[in-house]
Image 1: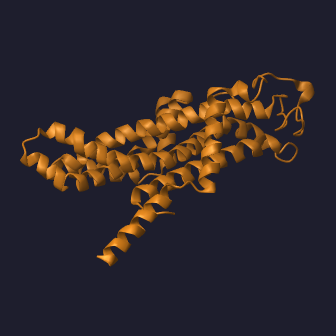
Image 2 (image 1 turned 180 degrees about the vertical axis):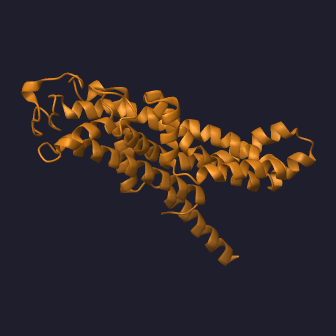
Image 3 (image 1 turned 90 degrees about the vertical axis):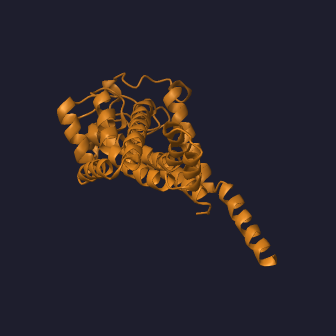
Length: 286
């Protein structure tokens, strides 16, 4: 009994430690909170119009009046980065949400179907996953045309297969669980069993995956915008700002460096938060 009690005590301590935020988690959460506030209330951080041009103030280095300097048209880079967070977060969150819901539906259907139906959907998912996600997004944009809405849809479609595969695997595990078998034995309707037991237990791992996927979606959207397939100038979008600053790296490095640093910090922060959620779900500390 003493050995069992000690093991239970260690397990309880491990679970408690997992819930304690680490300094890295605090930094990541704080940065994401600031990013969300800048997207919702940009005037809290700057009163400068991000698209107002001033040729006389073009290519000014970072200083008190312009913390991130100005670009080739005299626009304030700090204001453009702040206002650009709205576009990037909408695309990142929107694409991830669409991919999560679509992947949940497709993967759950594949896991619940009989062998033939599961085989067809599984092979289709594997075929699509054979193509790089960025290439899939490029193909989608080539079909539906460039633009902000097209960018969101393209990034979402590109990552749907990844969510669908995880959802299928999780559905196969959950539908063989004892509580699902018990529900069937008690005569619970299949639709109720799926909605009450299968979907909630399948959704958990997908939410963890989506947390880390937001940063990936933002990076993909910025890459497509960098190629000129997203919003058009003078829209303050991070990828577009990078694209405009690439020709001035030798003379005005700040145009591209600061939005690049913000994109990097966003990806790292979402990864830290996602890994913490993953560790918490697994009942162990990272």
